[in-house]
Image (cartoon, rainbow, N blue to C red; front, side, top):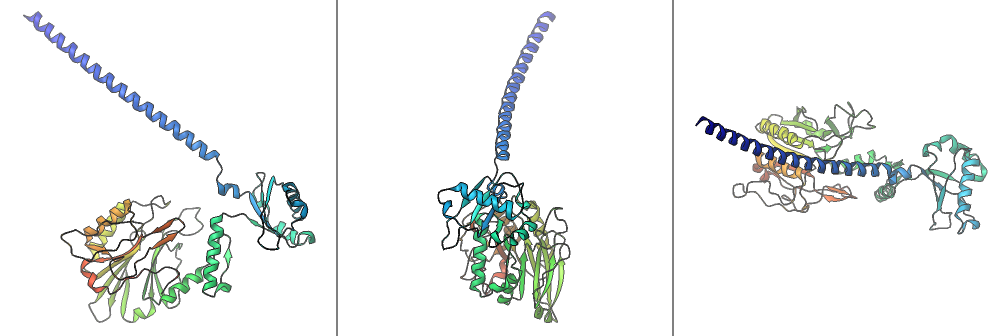
Length: 416
């Protein structure tokens, strides 16, 4: 009896061990397959990365180019690129006295008038900065090249942007007060003129790009702002930042105080009417886009903003504005069948993840957007060479909608 029991137990153990081995071997085989797949993906990524690193970008190539203007076009250059190349190398050697630089290729552009076409000189042997200010002074003193001007080669997009800016300045009749510096325009005066033209009581600004304790000075307005406290060590300018510009006359009727600036890129102010209980709490905020070097967790951003709404909603009437980088498309910012608010006109039909989180914030706070809901002048808030979108919003509590008489999105060409 005991022998039979022992045999039964032994057979049972062997069977269980065999089953366990099969399961382990099956899992090992599956694990090996997964490892092989991952190895294949890693190898593919390494090859892709290597090809990207080895392949020079268009901008990198342009860093090795210079543009030469005013160099006379000779008859012997017709259908003879080598002649143009020799002329450019002579300019560099004799005009700039740079004997260690030699160009490999040149391209003469066709001029639309009687002037000689410009030349794009390309090289892989030197960096653009070697043609320095000293060389430019020398070329001015050389009679053979007195009318020649050398500048950096810049992408088509930058040239187009400069031309567009010049057109705007020409149209407003103030082109003599502005100048283009490098690849961008010194347009601080232009921005101020746009702000003053509107004659607004309050101006909420996102991405002020101010550093440390810098402020914005606009005649007739007072600055209340929050600059980023930490900047990248290699940053040439500030980043992010939000502020209010408040008209001087507002201070005659309201006491204006800083309510909260504890969170980066979120700023609250409080306006208490003098001799009255009337109070407003205004907020301006900026949420960096996905992929930004200063990316922040959008869920944390909206959680912080929601907490502040709950905290200050009993202080006074709340209004929030800012650049949320959120595209909401046809998503609803209220609970259908429960909340009764006017419908919203949709012009940007695209949605993104930030937009979903933004909608959750609005539903949780009982706020809604004014864009496309109030007034008859809805418009895109972001227009660039990449396209058009709505990412900037003004939001208010549901009960505040009847108090809003009008809402308008202005473009830069129509500030009033």
